[in-house]
Image 1 (spheres, rainbow, N blue to C red):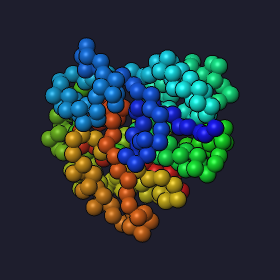
Image 2 (tube, rainbow, N blue to C red):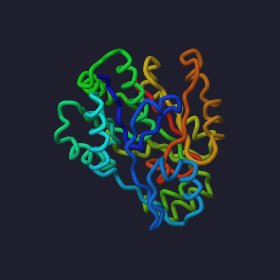
Image 3 (cartoon, one colour):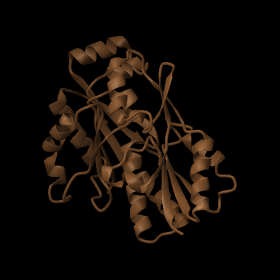
Image 4 (cartoon, helix red, strand yellow):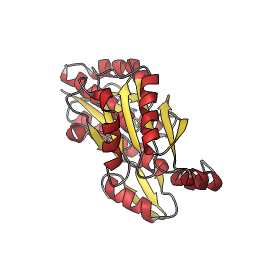
Length: 280
């Protein structure tokens, strides 16, 4: 018997650990065309379509049947599992997993990450470390619930266009913001997306991102750290890493990075830079 980790596809992971988890996909709809995330459409293809389309795509949570299928496989193999979902404040995915839980309560433990994207990703990475340490599924779920409040996810957006398309800001505000090169900084706390400030230009934006990391109390480098970007290029992420080098030098041998998928990408648009870590 071994312990497996199950996630939904809104979780963004370091490339080196993607093969270590079971992924239950969400659905992404561009107009009347539906795609199964990670199967019918890659993150790269998602951003290509996002840029090409005037209307924002929609996403929908995995069905209970998809979770039940994953749970049945765990049971058939004689294993146990921990399920880590996107925050219940952002999606009904946790509810779908709980509906599927009947008849599997003895082998499946479900954890609401309280985060999304790379924020959930570092919780998954920590869970895999606990698996390697020989913890049981129940022990892992308990430890994740105790530590998940330490997760901090902060991001710098490159454009206001997609917030406008999603109705989160007015067209006037988006036009003014574009003219002034306004870059909003957001975070995710308790599954809620908050605007922390607005910077003029990428340089000031990167400085504000660094400041917010310091305001959070700093990074616990004994636990996973993950950086991410939205869109088709990681150029802005590389520039941020260069500007914030002193935060990481001497504390990490290397910085793990990944592309951020549709859960954040549909609202942030391309060009966003994000950092997820456990607070000290």
